[in-house]
Length: 195
Image (cartoon, rainbow, N blue to C red):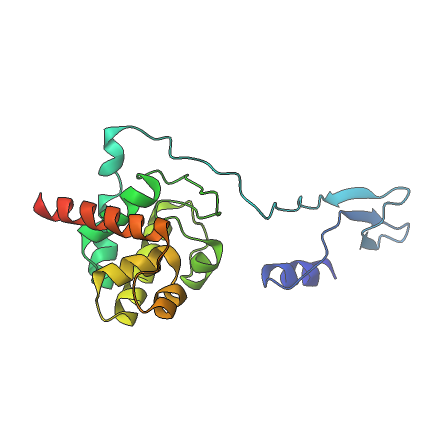
């Protein structure tokens, strides 16, 4: 019974979270229950519920090494998804300033500031793992570049505002944040290409 419950949890099936108690009867039969009884012992402590909203964590790594620390991952992802490494570097610079622990006020996380739904779509299981985050973000950039026929400005705008907003407005959405974001990313992109 317990094994099947644990199996359901591993599959992501909604299982109620409760403490599990183990008891052994006089006949040696072991039973598990979510109700404590005389002679039972706590077998599995229920995991606390996760908070739905994240507390923002602003970038805090100010070491100069942060700009080159993830170069191997950047080059691997750039090669795999055929996205310029300079664009990836520009997106990371604007999104998190190369801090893998950054969390935004909107719950975007990691180096490339992936939203939970986007991370899930891009098969990222740990958004704070630099390699997974970079590969997930670059995979998303590839999808957007394909969707917008390689138009760099629209790809970057969609990375910030979502592809739906770019399609709805037929171009860069008239959001001040997105317009500023596109300008910053493209400026860094040109800077990195010039080096």
